[in-house]
Image (cartoon, rainbow, N blue to C red; front, side, top):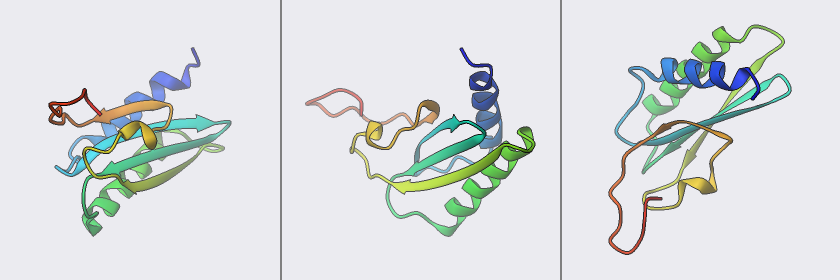
Length: 107
């Protein structure tokens, strides 16, 4: 495994402390060469505070990865129960517990 995997997951999870709102469904991340991508998936309308929190998280992750690394955040609305895998990047840093529908498994 690539050594960045563990460092990236730990960085994102640390940066998320205190930044998780009730409408945040998931945070996934990944990297290509020296570019890190963070994807925040929200349920329902995305408030200005959610955009600000995502920016703070991205800034904290960027502080853990000095140049030449870059960090870019992507904010997506995907209402529950739509399948989170539709927007997921490679690594899952956060996943909200969601009610399982009677007709199927978790999303």
